[in-house]
Every structure is written in structure tokens, then in C-alpha cells.
Picture 1: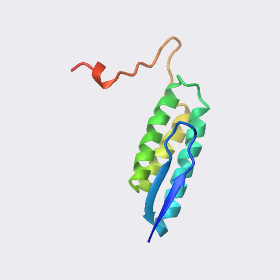
Picture 2: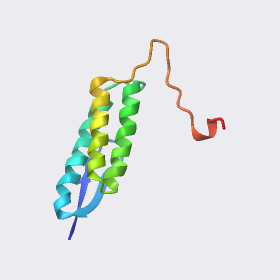
Picture 3: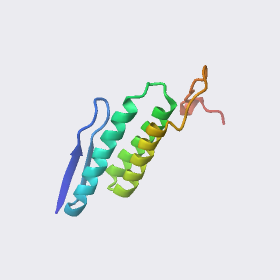
Length: 108
């Protein structure tokens, strides 16, 4: 028997719907709740904050892991995102700007 767990997501972010065994449904729910909490922390930072950028990437990976039913990996990425926001591990010097290249802009 399987159970589906869906997490409420902030506007503009995808929800997580995962089919899992009944005994794993609690882990999936905990992961989804962790993603939501970490997302709220990241959203509190300015949009151009480098730590927010990295935290959002970790959360994107956490959602992918949750969607695959990999709750351990999901929790690891949620922890990394939370640490990134709370520890503010990446910063830019005054006047510096993060320049994200699209795949078609990369030299090679």
C-alpha cells in the first residue's frame, strides 16, 4: 500500500508529490516541511544575495531527491540550504555582481 504526500509550497515554487510506502510517508512529509522552512529563510534574503542563490540551488536538488523518494539525500540538501542562509557562507564584495551564464553562453 502506498501513500501520497504533498507539501504546500510558496507561490511560484513547485509542490512535492511523492508516492511512498506507508512507513516512509512520515519521512517524506518531514522532508517537504524542511524544504518549506528553508525556502522561507532563503526568501527573506535579498534576491541578489549570493547565499540565497546557493540555498535555492540546494532546495531545488532537495525537491528532486524528495520526488525520487530519497528522503536522506533530501534532508541533507535541506540542511545545506539552511546552513547557507543562517551562516551566510557566500558573500560578494561591494560592487561585485553574480553573473550566471546560460548554457548557450558558455565558451567551449
